Length: 181
Image 1 (cartoon, helix red, strand yellow):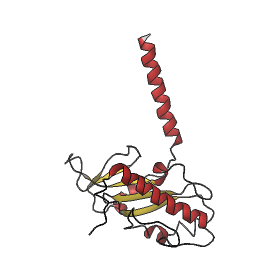
Image 2 (cartoon, one colour):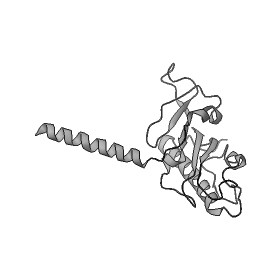
Image 3 (cartoon, helix red, strand yellow):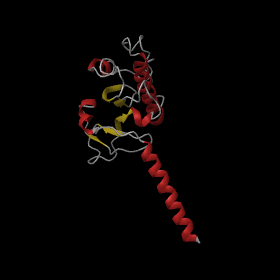
């Protein structure tokens, strides 16, 4: 009887794990963009954690296992999986330092009908570099607006704002994200 209980628990745990994996929105490989997002990084962790992410280190964590992370790399679709634009989610890869400042954003994939002139151009993601999680992320105010793509633009700003703030709330302390003096 005891074996049956253990087997049952293992099966339930496996089903929950498979269910969580099935809900994940898969994207392209992140590794080619690591050095674009953090050029001076010394190493990166494996992909994992909750929410899913990579840790960024100033030195190789294999040579110095006690090295603190200097940032995080994550997919907005892993942090905010239920956020969608006009036609679906826009897949952004984000690099954020340990002060809640975005180091860079890569627009990887979207199925938006107006994505080719709203979120696809490099100048769109460039405006997020050095943006703090404390910024408002409001289209037309601190995010450039593009006419005829208001739903896509609002989604992009919202998912970048909410995912970076979620990561900061999960991994950073209030002292780390205070405005720099």
